[in-house]
Image (cartoon, rainbow, N blue to C red; front, side, top):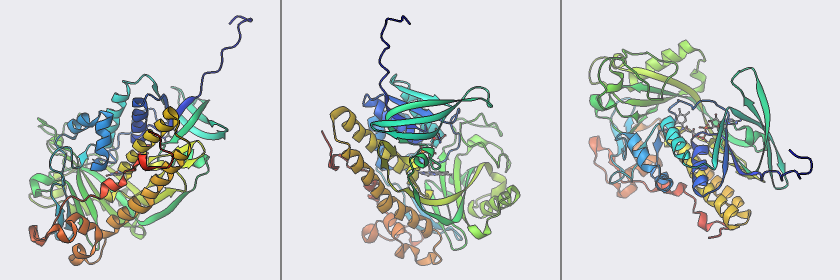
Length: 464
Ligand SMILES: Cc1cc2nc3c(=O)[nH]c(=O)nc-3n(C[C@H](O)[C@H](O)[C@H](O)COP(=O)(O)OP(=O)(O)OC[C@H]3O[C@@H](n4cnc5c(N)ncnc54)[C@H](O)[C@@H]3O)c2cc1C
């Protein structure tokens, strides 16, 4: 550099820094990129998370998938697991209590089942179309400082050698925390995470088992019972043309403890299903052997009969124990830090609202940030967004998810369908009509999930 040349002005700060390239961070990055806003995405991990955590996308988010141009790819990835219904069963007898066979009228109206890693892969591929989005993997945010008109973030970048790392500094006008349940950004911003841990552990098992062929089960099956309760639903449809014995070429999901339980034959000829159940805190034993015994005992009860010993016909691909938590950040905006997804709220998965709510945070935030940064909407719009999204969690997601969780543990299963709001909602209420299989309530599509969306145009400060 020549001495008489004035130093170039510093580059403008990145307008938007997203911390965490999980499903919510990736979706937000895509929507902001499509609005022509430059984005820097920092992700601590160097490889995508293969765990098929969430897999059901509810109708409320489908319009955003279409607008983002990923809907067709997601339908293709769902391999037929589209628009499937839900069913409540007595856990002990298998009798159907209430069912909503097909909530929509065809592809595009009902839920879409795509495991989380596949969903993230589709978003990552789509993001490659936008050169103004940069994803830096292996960069973990450690702390931040709010400045007058932005945020400075300190991060640790891991090089190829695991023992060495560099400290990096980034500045941005806005930082969005999409860094999950243990959000370092939320902690660094001093935002409390409030709520309750439910007195039950959850165990999610991903198994290859022919629920449909053996017992005619499709879609989400909720098992209600005094002694134990759970949820059985498909993650991946059987692979077309997959035959033979035990060859697993990898579908990017489902590796972990429990590998190899069962006979392992013809893994891909049957679908991958989530079998999830809850365990009272006082019965929990924190050893691998105890977990293994518990999983075998529960699967022995939860897998429907219809042939040889169910456990012999089942391959367990993954077992994930975790705590059921209902937590919410005290605010979703503190100065120039904004919270979305699990960084903002946590809920048990029995209503399928965790990821869906996070994706709706992302789509509404992308719209208000665009209005603010590109069309001059005042910062009050961000406050109004933060209040609206927090209200949605507190008033809609949290109570519905808790009710879904406890409904399955109701001691009086016989009268559950008359008493419980979740089953009444599934059954379509008084007008839903009684008289399905075994006297089960036959349902109509519930309109509830659309209430999870935020009408951003009605928020204070909105500018067209
Ligand atoms: C077993 C199981 C089943 C579930 N089933 C459902 C379901 O059926 N329906 C549903 O809606 N939800 C479900 N969920 C919840 C769902 O998986 C989460 O809501 C979802 O993963 C949240 O996405 P996210 O992007 O907000 O956070 P995450 O997926 O946690 O992603 C956060 C990202 O941030 C990165 N990160 C973390 N810290 C830092 C840091 N300091 N710096 C940089 N990067 C960082 C992480 O590596 C990660 O990639 C389930 C969860 C589990 C565990």
